[in-house]
Length: 115
Length: 114
Image (cartoon, rainbow over the protein chains, first blue to last red):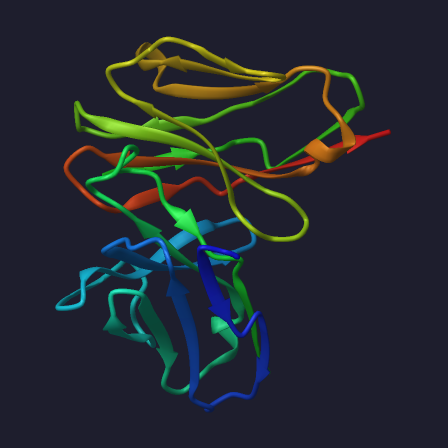
């Protein structure tokens, strides 16, 4: 079973709709992240969370919100989706006390298309 | 500010050729970490290597090798005797030692033709 899962894997929606992308992990890691990937731009950080009570904005948080419902779950919401939010979204986890504290473990990605 | 530059957008080689993917980084921190990730056509991100700023020893793992040179702020990745399965997008990334944000390069798309 995958350690970091994302649902849905693919989603097509319309402008103005509210969308939630979900991430779950079984690795027991405290730190979780949301990134988006656009062609030619690599991955950019949207939000990150160090634990259930700690949520921080990344470099491109406008238009997004997050919720850390539990250590294992970190959801990303688009309150009113717009076409330039069409991208591949990745969730990731890391363990600061682990053997490789700076390694991030990525989910399989969610491909979101906003029409 | 931190920055990662992968100047090669796309590289195309024929199977069995050697290929080097370049990565140049910028940071003011003395402690930092460098990474390479592979993204095959299926889309997932696969961790390849992590290197800290105090360890300039080159590393070899099978057909993969990495050349870390602090003097030129480069962390290049070489695939020896490339194979079709190496076709993917490869990302170089940088994280500072005291922080938590990982900065990714734009990626290099590698095509290996049979």
